Image (cartoon, rainbow, N blue to C red):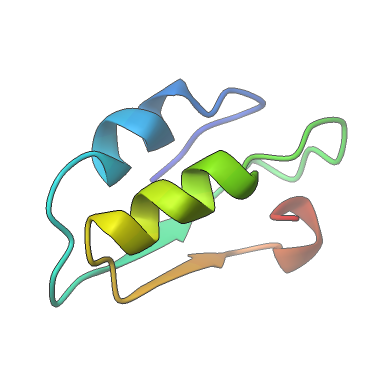
Length: 61
């Protein structure tokens, strides 16, 4: 999923059931904003997402 400096789309996606799925995040290389925070991580766990990853992991903090 592409989301440059805006994690609103991530909230929408992670609210869905993620059983058996991982979400790969492309933040466009920006290091100005964190895309994943504790609330989004908690939402992913609650909705059974198997994993979250970033194309540039330092941008997913």
